[in-house]
Amino acid sequence: MKKKFNLTHPKIKYARLIESVKSDVNKYLKRERRKELPEGVDFWDFDCRFGPTAEESKVIHVAEIGRFIDAAEQDQLNSFYVEIMAKEGRRTKKPTETQESEGVDDA
Image (cartoon, rainbow, N blue to C red):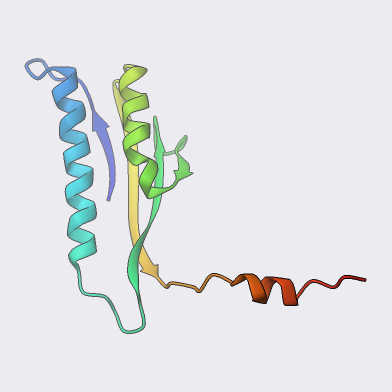
């Protein structure tokens, strides 16, 4: 999803447009997560970008999208750009305390 959201409309209030954008983003994320996983993949991960324009957008985490949309609402932006690209994710094991201490020399 690569989309520039315009937040100006003659009949729809600004707050309703913001809610609509959040709804569209959440619908897209849910739709992508429902897709069947390829062999050897644990989950769907996302590469996300957010900014006033596509050229000025910066990389963000998928969990931060709502916060950035709220910040755009506070700044009363007329439009902003959101990019969400699905990618394959694989889980990795966290190292246990014994594994971490074995690698440290006390010399």
